[in-house]
Length: 395
Image 1 (cartoon, rainbow, N blue to C red):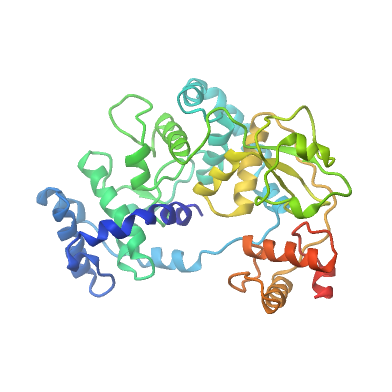
Image 2 (cartoon, rainbow, N blue to C red; image 1 turned 180 degrees about the vertical axis):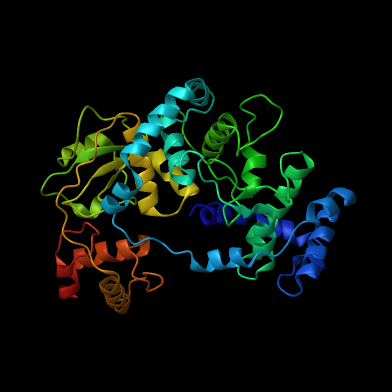
């Protein structure tokens, strides 16, 4: 669920790197053995020792199960409240609290060195691998080479193969035994090989970065990666708020940022306590003006570097708060949402009016939310970006 977002981010630096590589090493598809020989040629051209390259690729095999997993991946269509209640169980909360106590010194170090609050990493640890209980059983080398051979996104996965080779040369990767997610993520917080190289931390001092077996390594590496992605040390990421019955709903959403005092002037209030910061922030109402409401501070945007799903990000950010003592969010009484078929119908109508909603897929993504909010304004409806049957009927 997180690999595509992080791989897409890494892709920005790939074109220049590929331009200097052997032509034969840039292809995809065709005979798998021939393709692997091209990867080996590429690795040697980059300066890797020939014997190390041969040993790394010797056990690699094509894995059709990886391709099947890639093809069937989908974006969940659950609303925020339903999704959050499914992911956040009492057991996960209790386990998180227990892990916070067990690794208190690690979390203290994490907050001191990287400025990332413990709840943030606890939430990722829980959602990614259930606190390390299930880290994926796909052979990582096979997965990365298989996806590099597949012609859908070879330029995205190829650098990860070479990063895994670097880890192997350092003694931190076994091409025959290292396992993880289908897209090549490894360890308790599911990091890609290049992220491990760039941000891996030997948290337990044994001379290796072991994200599969060492919680200190995994947690500190995850925190360092978030810091690298732009996390501002010591700053909040989100807090729950109450919104008034009437306000300019077109200002809600991540496109608008105002300081808390400006939101307060419109009737927005913290659900409890005080404002956590005076930084510019966005009002988020994932199920419209009658549903849950949150104020998203700048650190909230860093979550999208970890995962691009709005619902996942919002749930992870809320769970981080919950693990640090926040109450259960107020679900409110939102208007019922649309079914998948109704959402497709809405997207078609929005597209016919000239709005870019992307693919007609029945999913309430960022493009569809923007289009809904714009059309609500056109029709004189509350522009809270939440599609309802009333909107569909009006269209």
